[in-house]
Structure formats: C-alpha cells, structure tokens
Image (cartoon, rainbow, N blue to C red; front, side, top):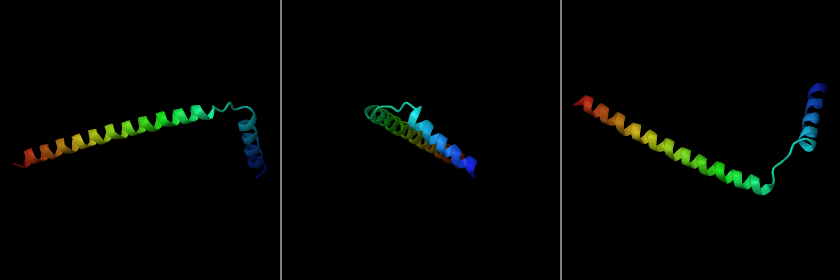
Length: 65
C-alpha cells in the first residue's frame, strides 16, 4: 500500500512542478475546435449512415419484387 501512496504522491508532484500547462485562452480555443470537429464528424457519420439505410432499403425492395 505504501508503494501506491508513494506513486500517487510523486505523480502529483510531477504534475505541479514539471508539466507545462497551457494558458486558459488556448485551452478554450482548442476546446471549441475539438467540439466543432466532433459535431462535423458526427453529422458526416449520420449522413453516411442514413445514405446506407436508404440504399439497403431500396436493394431489399428491389429484391422483394
């Protein structure tokens, strides 16, 4: 258990002293960029999924007749 406690303590010390954290404005800008691209990617994925849905439905309709 002492090893785990020591590891966590050293990890927090490392985060406080050796990590270079970005400025708050940069964090906000990058967050907006990630959110926008996530929404765009989700919409593209939705569109492709709906396109395949229509395609498969038409194929089944064609094969049924």
